[in-house]
Length: 294
Image (tube, rainbow, N blue to C red):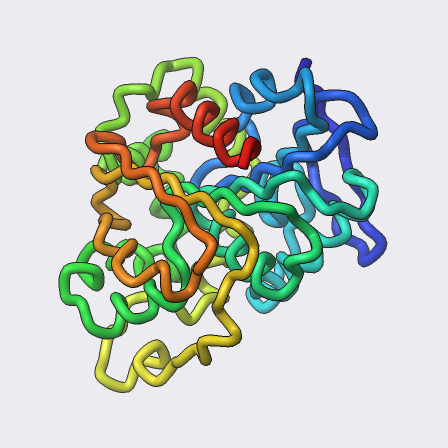
């Protein structure tokens, strides 16, 4: 049974979490992306909660979690600090049996696996590009620049107002643009509305705080950015699940990934989109089971 808790962390941040499973059991942590929230993992919590302590936090800025006003508060180092404190508090200090992450959650998880491999036994990434591969694509691929152009819109100062208009019309369009949202029932829409009505600024600040977005001019900061390989190489065993129908994050972002993730297994899912967690929950659960058995 899924419950909700407020995890008050030592550095003053509170994360609203959905949890399932016995305390003290081996722990799984699930990280959501944008424009989602922790509720997207409910089927995974129901599936794994008989054997694992499952923790799905609303990341800072989302739903009822703390939402600092400053854009700088959403840099990856602060997001990682939240997760390390949450692991210490809710998972006995770790290591997690697995950290499972999608979209923005994956962006944080890649970095956490590099900088704190001791926090997890394995990593499962779902349609979330490795930072070095994504940087390369943003710098050199017109197709990726076009596919990610929405990121610059989300950084606009009026993005909150525009996204909230007409019952979040642009948000529904965003979900549909990244993959036909046939799973978007009225009940699921109500879950999304509850998250978005709690506020969009924190979620949008992830984009505003990140240098990884398409260049708008030859001297855009992203064009001079580089990652030394030792700062982005993941040594943790990693399983990647990729819906190949993702239009914002195409499967070309898998090219060269092995160089940065030497202990990697990969499952490509033809026809699945960016919203594979909604579309194919049984497949996602089976893939996580497979990763846990290795």
